[in-house]
Length: 270
Image (cartoon, rainbow, N blue to C red; front, side, top):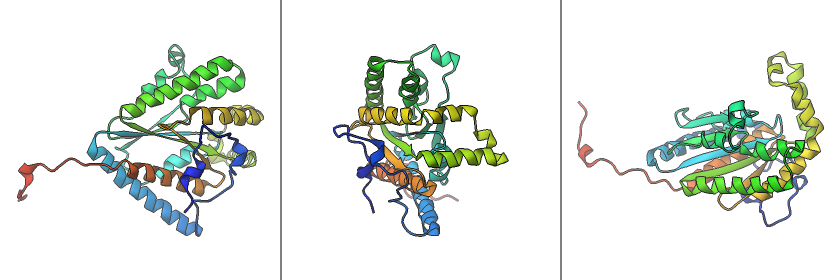
């Protein structure tokens, strides 16, 4: 099995998104049926690990999903957590800031939805939108961008020092794959609600967004909150890789469940 560390961003090494093939499928071994069966097994394992996280009631996990439009953030959540109790997982989607959110600092809306103890929280987009869109649109300069990188690193360090394990995944798709997925949304009436004309405007700035990602990933991949780049042209591969990363992370937390109540010893329910 390939090593997940190969896709972990090392801030001390030069990085280019072009060095990672979005069409690669190193974690999708076997036939289609075998891959689907493996994903189901991993999803069940995630459910069991989430139960242990809840039982321990001491730590929490935050999964951050970033990627270009159509990279599969919704699909990842749907399939990876298909077997997990909804009581143990929450999802928060970050859209354009509201007027109320713009009246506060850009991290305010993020801190409001961090995971509770014993919970897995998934962010569909995140605070990283604030070092992507403003950078590409030229709304903030180099100095402000660098300040935001530092503020984000400090924010995530606060989370990890108070019991949150942070897992960050950049879902990496090719421009050709995005074109096919956008076209599918237009051509299929049942998917047209997913399409917005603004998606075309963002696509025209594809290279600018790639450069913005290439800057932010190494600048914000830290020992306490590293980034992993997920080749995502293949939806099954994307799901399998994220599921493996989560299972590996949760197993590494080595949960300790509470000791049983001595008063229950010998108790028989009639």
